[in-house]
Length: 82
Image: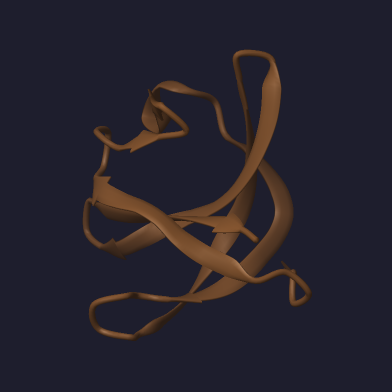
């Protein structure tokens, strides 16, 4: 697993699997391409550390990068680099 340690990642959105508006769309309606990298993030509520994969998705012809994973069953967090 290739860790991305040089970028700061911030929680941008969270919600139920299949129903998260992220980048103005329901992100679950798009194909996510795994970059092979991962990042460590903290759950904002319980401060638990997670390792989430980094993905790229194309929305309206623009590639966007984000990290995503489940905090608990069916509850997803989405992080963006800053």
